[in-house]
Image 1 (cartoon, rainbow, N blue to C red):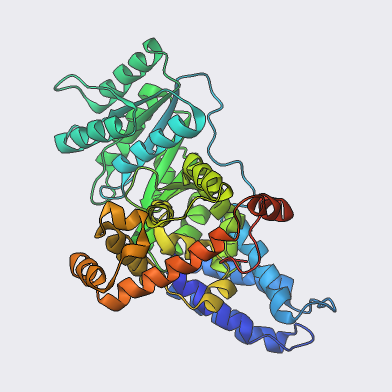
Image 2: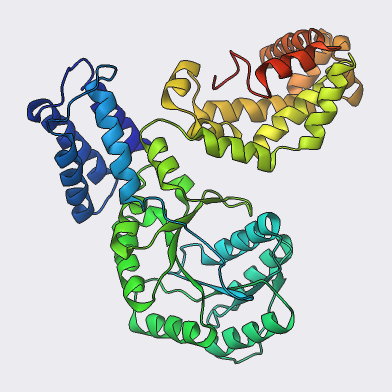
Length: 453
C-alpha cells in the first residue's frame, strides 16, 4: 500500500537536498510533484487541493534549522499534514458502552464485510478476552450467512442462527436479545451490500441500526475501489451516523488514495486496515505510523508489536536454552525460525514496516525474499529427519536427492547449507554464558548488523 506515492515523494524530497532555505522558488516544484503524486495515488481532487494549500502555507519561508536540510524540514511538514489528513490523534475504535456492545458493519457488496466481521471478532477475543456473537442480516444471500457461520467457528466466536423468512431488522433484534441473555460482551452485525448505492440499501441499514441501537457503526470499504470508495463513503456517511471506517484489501493497493480520501469525506477516523485474507490480518490504523510509512520512514513500532503478538515465545525460549547449554543448532531449528517469519507475513510484511533507507541498503525485494523463504523451507522439508538433526551427513548424492525432491538446483541446496553452517558457527560461539552476556549488553535489543539495525 502507498508504494507508488512513497516512491514519488521520496524523489521529490531528494530534489530539495542541498538547499539552505525553503523559498517559494525551490518549494514550487516540490509542491507540484507532491500534487501529481497524490493524484496518481487516486486521492480525491478536493482533498489534494486542501492538503497542498495547508503544506504550502506552512512551508513557504520557513527558516531551516542549522542541523536540517530543506528536505528534512519539508518532510516534517508533510508528515504532520498527512497525520492531520488521516485523522490526527483520535481515539479510534472503543467499546465504551454497556454490554453487549453492538458493532454494525455497513458497505457495498464485495468490500469484505463478512470476512472483516470475523477478523474483528478474532481480535476482540484474543486481545480483549471478549465473548463475541456474530450475526448476518444478508437475507438475499444465504451463502453469506453460511460463510459467516463457518468463519465464526474458525475464530472461536458464536454465531446467531436466524429464523427462516425473518426480516433483516428482526434478525438483528433477535440477535441482540440472544447477546443479552447469553451475557456476550460484543454483538457484531454483518449487513447486506449492493453492487452500487441505492435507496433500498440505505433504508435497510437505517432500520437495522434503529433495531439494535449500535454503539459502533463502521463503514467497510475496499481500498482498491478508488473514487468509487469516496462516493460510497459519502452516501453511507449521509445515511448513518458513522463512528469509523475499516479499509479492506489494503495489501493489494499500491496507490492507497482511498485511505487519504475517505477520512476527509466522512469526517470519521479509519480504525482498522485489512491487510490479507487470514483471520489475523486486521491491523489498528494509526495516522502517525501510516504517515511515516508513506514517507519512507517505516513503522518499526508496529513491527515490534507484531513480533510480540505472533512469534512463538515458548519456541524462542526453548531455542535460547538449547544454545546456552551448548547443544547443537540444527536444520529443524532453522526451519522453525523460517516458519516464524512466514507466520508474520513473510519478507514483504517485514519490508513494508522498515525504513526505506534500510530496505535500499539490504538490496532485497519483497517478492524475491518471500520466494527464497519458501524455497528454503521446501529444501529442509525434502530432507529426512536424520539429515535435519545431523546436517553433516549430507553428502553429494544426498544433496542431489534433496534438490530433486524440492524442485530446486543443487546450488540452492549448497547455498542453504552454507548459510546454515555460518549460523551454526555463530550459535556455537554463544554457548555457555556468552548468550546471556550478549543479551544483557543489548538489554534485549538487536545487535549491530542485524537486519533493520
